[in-house]
Length: 253
Image (cartoon, rainbow, N blue to C red):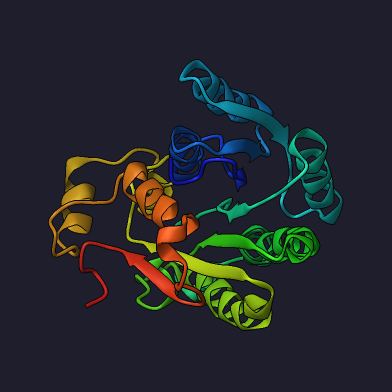
């Protein structure tokens, strides 16, 4: 059990990468708080963990709210009295648009969830991890943060910003025994995928166009990211901090 005795909080745990990671963490012995703005979705993930013999609780949390982030930490401590792993995974996509067609509301929403949400979550968990003198903070970034696709300029900017912010926080927290790593996936089979393609559903032509950009010849699955997150959260990655860990099938070479 790579995470035996650990307590993990995963945001955006109701679907996709967050759900797969929560399930994977639990399978390796962690007790998991499944946080999502969609409480029903978070509950579904928690129930799947419990059905498999793990321990989990669902919590409704809007990551753009400082109050919700603090409440998430408080509920975690009330349940299990520690917090070892914080996976700031919640995010929103962007439909491809030329820059002159992107409205202010779209910009504000993407930055609020993808950047401010990460900042507020990390700010809330750091005091706990400092007291413990240990902890792992993971952030879902994107290959878009350093190799953008056309029309996704705001999303790419948000992911580039969190990767840079995570590096700075990693330097700050290293003396406290806390590691910080950004995970950068290529396009992944999640409910967000059609939005990135500007569609309501992914058709064969869309998929083929994206797959052609990945040297390994396929898109990520949520489980690919869950496996990476497990490694980075575990002691196997004890000397990994401040890096952007690409899970991209060679896309960024």
